[in-house]
Length: 332
Ligand code: HSE
Image (cartoon, rainbow, N blue to C red; front, side):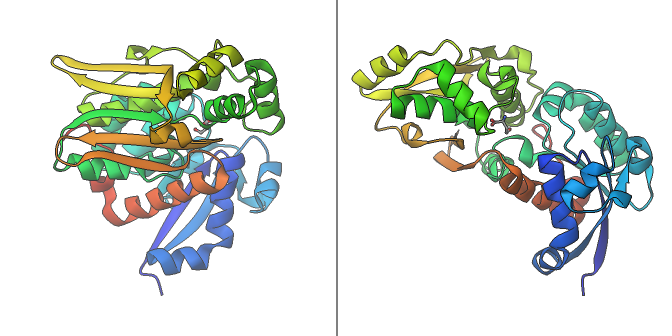
């Protein structure tokens, strides 16, 4: 018998939110066995009750009023998976200030509004958790935090966008050009109908901004990051990289300097003897270099309902166990 009941609200019942809500309802006993907590879905917020049906949680659990759901006294943890900057950022801050822990996969909202969110979490004595926002199911932020307990982070580099990695690794494997490979990625559901956020590097810059904020102990806004996407990469560029003994990947990088750090997202030559050259399809990889531990490499699925909901469920459990002590912090 679990000791503690945790009420959860899920804002957004799309692919990711639907998977989280479904797990809370249908995998309740496994989650209780694994965590020792009773996680209970209080409700989900979506544009219509049909989203509840699609998620397999029924229509009656779907609310059309996000603020009322956040304010429900039964709710202890708010999962925000609406995506986009607003109203997500405002809802996150509202929940945190009201003393609800927030678990989010929303890299755009977190990277742009981190100071306001952390202030709201301090006011509400609540936790902001965003493991799923960078690297999907890879336990990345928790690893970074663990390393930072005894290390100064000298540099970071990552393949943090699955869509562009799918496109670049496929262009390399098949000698194909950018446009048909993007069309194939769209047909397979890897790339969005409007692929701009992924292919122009915005998504990767949001993720790097979160990593760099943690590593440097100050808010790094995505606008501080020099950004080049992959839409200009041709089959010829990849063939040229191959002839030089390597390939091309979209790399998000942070390098500490004497007076701060350089931050960039750009298509980058990767030699064949670098493990990053073997990161294929929609997988992600992140290398963290600490001054004591040296390089640490994490690899796994950076997107998709199952890995992303794994990170979200872990964050819910961690927030429920440790409360505000589990929250994202900037260098304190
Ligand atoms: N569009 C993102 C990607 C989804 O391709 O990596 C996960 O953040």
